[in-house]
Image (cartoon, rainbow over all chains, first blue to last red; front, side, top):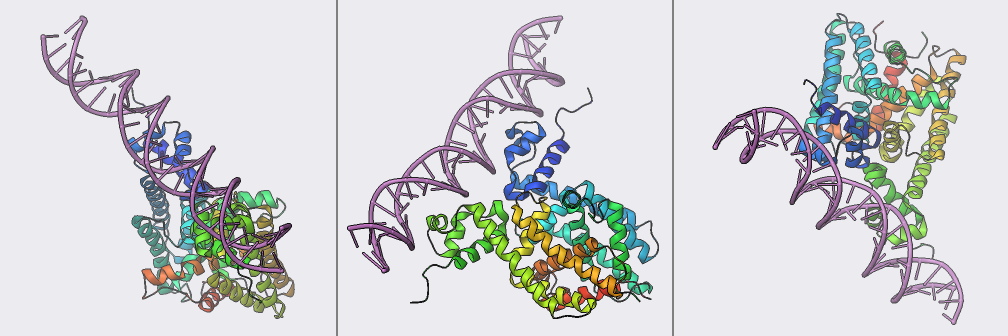
Length: 200
Length: 200
DNA sequence: TATAATTAACCAAACGGTTAGACTAAATAG
DNA sequence: CTATTTAGTCTAACCGTTTGGTTAATTATA
């Protein structure tokens, strides 16, 4: 028989959904167990307590996003290309897997107080990757000498909020919801970030 | 005697801090009472239950930010001026009063599920104000025809995340924390948003 | 004294976490 | 080949604590 009865992935997926929807304090361990279709005691047997569950889920999500970003970036050659690729992959990832952006926004809102150390490092790694891309663009001569940190937050803040609100916006104003698909989001942002809004 | 012994403001301030730090689920009613220096039963006597507390705190915060924004905007004449003024006032407001950005990011993270209806409308009002500013700029001829919704989230996403992470960034990398004061944040963002990052 | 303000003490429900044991499949012994 | 032990998997039921919310009584005020 090849199918393992209970996959860790199933548990982490369930936990990810619950944490993304309700945050750490709002998430209920019983509900995670229910979603995973197992008994609560099984969570503790397989993974550990609520904090460990949270930690595992964060690390997995961050790693997924960072890996996807690196992979997309390494195929590009010029800085503007890199920006486009990065926006695309972050938007894609943030849309299909709401967890990481959701957690990061919540942690930002709460000053990172519930974020485990490794999660903070992961956040930093994500930011550093963006930062180095800016530096590259500046050195390469295609970018103005903008502050990397500002750009980091411009990109992540906008992509995350746009991705997470896509459904909400579609629901609230179906006639002009703004960009909703990952590619729409990436394209719209790329345009403004690269060229600005002022006519010239 | 003019000083009322117990101000509603004291209670709402205490609640705002607690909600901003821990979100709705994480916030503890006992802790809010403690911060306000009163007995917990007093909260229920004066305001109501936890949800009502949350509602009041949100409405007050949103109104404060929106009023400040309108006031700053009405003194401007050209669209770029308006953008600068709006960035300045939002950054200022978000820095000194973390509640509104913190709540809005959390609500975005949770798909607005705990946000009361009036809070959703307030969010929309904030967005509409930004949106109309864009439209004005486009009609006036000083802005390219960018998507207003994208710009809304570009502005709010970036200002909120930058404001909320200011302390964190200063702590994590004191040598290059990026923009930390409201004016630094507004200026840095204004530059990129208006002119873009691509050299021309 | 009547009314408003305030609190200590309390309560039921919800919650995170544990436990003792049931079930199963494989390994081992007779 | 069968009986017995072993090890891993899984759960119902339970436990102590925390939490939002209430109440009954007390104090201040007019």
